[in-house]
Amino acid sequence: MIPEAFEYTAPATLAEAIELLARHGDDAKVLAGGHSLIPMMKLRLASPGLLVDIGRIAELRGIRRQGDAVTIGATTTHAELEESGDLRERFPIMAEAATVIGDPLVRHRGTFGGSLAHADPAGDWPAVALALDATIHATGPNGDRSIPAREFFLDLFTSALEPGELLTAVDLPDTAAGSGMAYEKFAHPASGYAVVGVAAVIGMDADGVCRDCRIGITGAGAKATRADATEMMLLGERLTDERIRQASRQAAAGIDLLSDLVASERYRAHLVAALTERALCTAWERARPLAAKNDWYAD
Amino acid sequence: MVTQSIRMTVNGQRHEGTVEPRLLLVHFLRDHLGLTGTHIGCDTSQCGACAVLLNDEAVKSCTLFAVQADGADLTTIEGIATGEQLHPIQEGFRAEHGLQCGYCTPGMVIAAYDLLRGNPDPTEAEIRHALHGNICRCTGYQHIVKAIQHAAEALRTQDAAVVGGAR
Image (cartoon, rainbow over all chains, first blue to last red):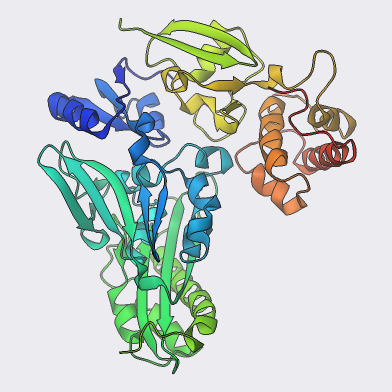
């Protein structure tokens, strides 16, 4: 399959990339890892006149640790996130999610920023970014902007990025430092995309009371969302298996569930509840050893 | 037609070419350089028959434009053996009947190479995880897994770096 003809440019700096995107408007597309865009171009679902390849912009790539917080450059690959020592200790969910994306060869090319900006309703990173309360940085012709993950995913393949804006980096705040976290996914058997994916973060104080609960859900609806109702039912409570089970039943509340050949609306609702329960239980289990020595929540 | 000049090192040899930006890397390798050992299977980044090493990482060359590989160092299946001497991974596939039709084999060898370089003693589960992006429609995967175990052991016992014959 051959895409329509296009022009290609690979700027060396962010400033050049922004200038190119501003100059070419809708005709230009950003190419990062290309593992969503190139298949779309081969099917001629996308036919941009110009590809701006940001893969050679050094400042957009890499993982920088600042205390317990971490900044991830947009073109950092899934494989780099899977293998990063800087993430393993504080954000183990990053490797856990990375390793179930696509396959090893895809993970060598596909990027974190590309996946978020693409806002695929079945992408894995949106759920994780939501659960970690990530902040997404973008640069455009009018300068820099920071967008909370909660305000970033707007609709099917639609993010809060404005035309001409480029996602440059993502901050993972240190608020999850004393928390357990887990990612659970039911993968499409052929594509590997999430039919439903759930990322959960649980933090407890030394008394075992849930002080932090954040749940990101992908695959269920047109965009990734937080499971607010479930979170509210658990915050401030002493957790039990039964309480988690009850709360997980509310995880699909407010989601306009998708229905397709793989999973009906009803089955998706079941998956959301089941995977939320699993992710919460695993995150809870992982939070317990941290809770005993947790001074994070000491007021 | 807009074209661009690219250059890359493939199996240790420098190559230059003038290509349309839309030319996929796999077509550059096969049609421009004549390296037809890299296969096109699904053409949709599912099957891994087109796997090559790009700067030492296994990638799917059907999902990469040749211009993106400008300046890169590539290894294709043709660069894995040393002359007539098979690489231990290739020898493993021969010894353990890791192929029937052979269509997926170049990609399997590349994926195995990528695995064994980072993990010289993988478990069966790790081998299967590493082959997740490579599809075989003949053998099932049992013999392929055995072939890679065979190769891993050979590489460990002969105390050879997995970089044996490949560039």
